Length: 326
Image (cartoon, rainbow, N blue to C red; front, side):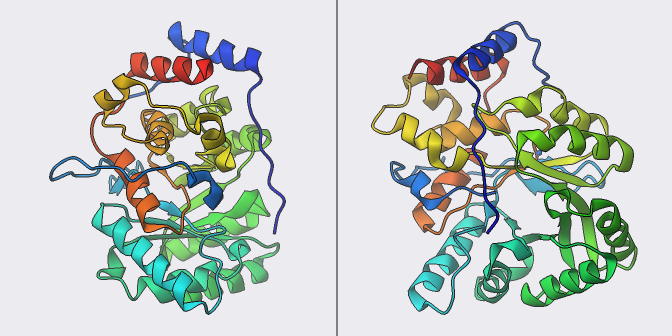
């Protein structure tokens, strides 16, 4: 498993971002999953009556995509444990019932692709998910074989989204993906990374190659993407998927045992998870956020972030300031 890292703002940098937002200088134009421990302090949310999850357009086609999906990095890397798989089927059914569609996967995630393929077929409407995975190897022939293998494992004749994982040999793989798009085997192309240090390279590729999607890290304390990356996506018609929304659980450690502010209900926020996700989704360049979980109650809570009012610029500033005081 690839070693992950947590990149956070210092107190001075965080304060600077808050001040910048207050001054209106942060960009707000007109889309790796977190460890299960992140949910230790989350309580199930109550969704609005007859809710409809917010959807945003994929710029390259205009197709509407629900704003909350699911990541599968650790949670779906299971073997033949019947109990674990039973819970994951509930996760997928609950996600679908609450309006989510995107399932994000990768060959790097161990057995996750095969588990997604097996269990999605046991849900009520397997063809209504948006299946996303990645290519994570070097070389044209290896890339082709890995993509074919992913389709087989996920039991799909056509994949919705194929992404280049962590930009590995991205020129080779993007060319292959675009050819497979022409053949009708893949619907969308994408690139991904999970660290701030890769944002500059992501931005260059977005401007030069204009993939359909870009996936990267962004959260209420990890705001580097607001400097120019989110704007570059919006300007170049690239849909955005956000990973690491909970900073591998660090945000829940910060807020454990602390009540939500009373005004959170103005945005239909009933949990800290929704607080963090709604901050991300309130940026209009974001199409979808993909927190990971293997717990049906937690996925229901996550899906709840796609309903109700989204914070405006004033609300985003308020959310930042309140978290800074904790």
